Amino acid sequence: MSAQTPVIEMRHVEKYYGDLHVLKDINLSVTKGEVVVIIGPSGSGKSTLCRTINRLETIGSGEILIDGEKIPEEGKKLAQLRSQIGMVFQSFNLFPHRTILDNVTLAPVDVLKRNKKEAQQEALELLKRVGVGDQANKVPAQLSGGQQQRAAIARALAMHPKAMLFDEPTSALDPEMIGEVLNVMTELAAEGMTMLVVTHEMNFARRVASRVIFMEDGAILEEGAPEEFFEHPKTQRAQAFLQSIREH
Amino acid sequence: MSISALWAAYGSEYLQALLTTWKLTFFSFGMAFVLGILITVARVSPIIPLRRFGDFYVQIFRNIPGAALLILLVYAFPKLKLLFPYATCVLIATTLIPSAFCSEYLMSGMNMIEKGQIEAARALGMSFLQMIRRIIIPQALRYSVLPMTNLLVATMLTTALGSTVPMVPRELTGLVSHINTHATGGVTAFVISAAFYCATAVLIGFVGSRIDRKVRILR
Ligand SMILES: Nc1ncnc2c1ncn2[C@@H]1O[C@H](COP(=O)(O)OP(=O)(O)O)[C@@H](O)[C@H]1O
Ligand SMILES: [Mg+2]
Picture 1 (cartoon, rainbow over the protein chains, first blue to last red):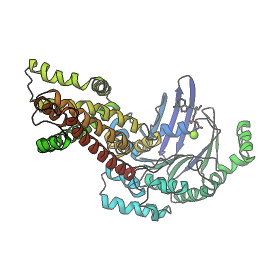
Picture 2: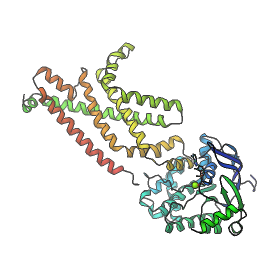
Picture 3: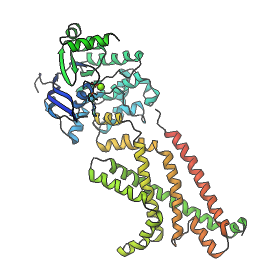
Picture 4: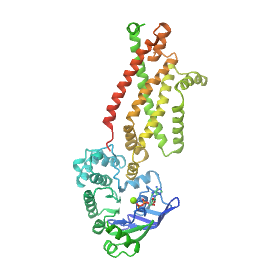
């Protein structure tokens, strides 16, 4: 595979929900080590875009390639592809009936057939790394939102993903917990993880993003380096959107 | 006859009948539980004919009266050269009917699982069966401990169907009919059986709520 093959590539992707055109000719590529931030108003299709990449949502037309290969439509191949792409959700989605440690080891053991002891050891290291090592034997409900989200990041990392998708990972958090999650993400980016991040955290985008994408009404309206985008947005709609979140 | 006179005459038979009721109840419930889980997996599987079959199964056995099912097993099946002993017929009836309810309770337990978890499991690359085994059934079971407790009691009461066929050994209700055809136990004969049913139900309820408290999912 050549050095230029993007880890994630979307070509002319279209998607409808009934009559609603949610993704309009989406072209996007994320190369190894890049951190691409997607911003845009609510309902613009950011989550849908994210979710088509591991086929939690199907697409109408176009293609999505991971490491140059088309996403399989179903079955074992699709499951295998999903296991290589980490996903972090707004609502954490930890498994509430299992301990934090189990949450992190379930998929490595079941899906990757890793040895349980080794998986646990690695899980503990990952949990330490994201700062919740001492919570390993609690269940999710005993953790704060910020701790849960960091555990969810550890759960995704335990699969050794090629890329990580983050769909508004801090939107459900109290303000004082946002920083701790963004710090973990910043470290991940610094270590070279390929990331696609939907977020409205402008400071994070400025510091960490290699590129910022602005979406509205299902289309990518603008794409550029963070400095350029935040200082000199080209489209009027991006200007208006940035204005509206700055007023907050 | 007074209770004490009845007990003096039939005490050991009552205990024998209690044991039979317990055995029938726990065997039926155990099998209904396993069947109920399998039927539920079929009902949520991606294979449409399997789903249909599961739904059909539940509709049939949830709605058929126990006595009608037993009559079918005892009188109709021999015509198809299917001959079961009476006890087996009773056991089949008291298994099939609760299995349909078991599946219904599991389905409503499943409805309490947040959809996001299923997405998280899929995003981790889990297969349908891995998801069922690790995420869905364990949670559905924890959410349905109390209904299952009620189902266990209901299963026990359904075993009284055994009194409508000449089943040996007799269960609690069968023994009452037996006593009343030989002696004049009257309602008193039933009071002893009723006390055993009630005591068992109370015990089941107690254990059930202990288990519920223990496995309840913190939210
Ligand atoms: N499952 C669905 N069925 C129908 N419409 C949906 C569904 N999911 C999202 N939508 C609609 O698609 C549009 C894009 O949604 P979404 O991708 O969640 O936007 P964003 O994440 O940018 O807020 C919205 O108008 C939303 O209402
Ligand atoms: Mg969204």
